Length: 132
Image 1 (cartoon, rainbow, N blue to C red):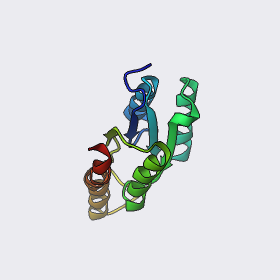
Image 2 (cartoon, rainbow, N blue to C red; image 1 turned 90 degrees about the vertical axis):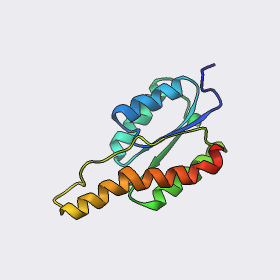
Image 3 (cartoon, helix red, strand yellow; image 1 turned 135 degrees about the horizontal axis):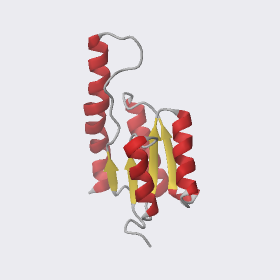
């Protein structure tokens, strides 16, 4: 039994880097985890890392999508509740500093703000009724 047995943890941007390390650590401590990212290959690799760490598929939910899209926020929260029935921890780990491609300064600002500020605010708003 781990410190997070029977807990449900969402970590945005958990397909690589710090987010991936965090989600694996929570899962090893017994949590059911919601793995999130944009890149299919990195998401699959993170899921594989969880499985290789001995985490059963029944404790893993994988949600793919851009955080600039409200539908992704809805999907993360709705699928978590549908699968696990609750949310205990929400970690807004995902972040961006530049929109991919050759974009204007305004387009880049909108992308970074949407990912780093608006998505966090909206995910907290959606998750709060389940966290209270």
